[in-house]
Image (cartoon, rainbow, N blue to C red):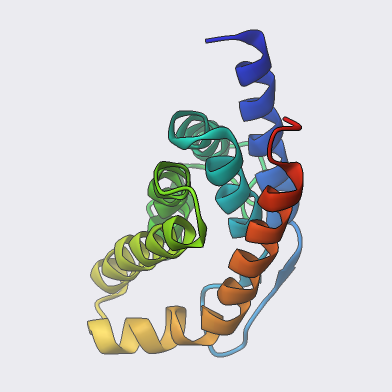
Amino acid sequence: MKTKDMITCSLFAALTAACSYIFIPLPFSPVPMNLALLPIFVAGALTGAKNGLIAAIVYVLLGAIGLPVFNGGTGGFAVLIGPTGGYIAGYIICAYLSGKIKNPAGMIAGLLSCYTFGTLWFSFITGTTIIAALTLCVMPFLIGDGLKIVAAAALVSRLKGKI
């Protein structure tokens, strides 16, 4: 791996952590709204599937070992095996697909995979039905995540060839 790629992956992992601190707790959902998906989309689409994947894995591993990189400064393996852990782990697939299909369709595919993995995990951990999990953990986020895709696509368009 080239030094430039290592630095880029590290920067996107750090940016994802920083964006995880920008969140809005939702009183009706155990999943908070945050900006972490924005750098995940950009990392994949801008740097490619491999580097986007590595950046997301680094982010998840940093949180797993206890660094406060998850939503609102949380961290630790317990977060990953908790109700929201599937969505965090879903960032890895999301970054990969965003880079593999280099256009907003890749980001949408990545988001759908993140929703699928996260919702199945949430349902399993909490014992809720899939419909209840979708109502709590996906429906409230559709508009915001759509806006993140629009913003990410615009950023990638402006930054293409500069990184």
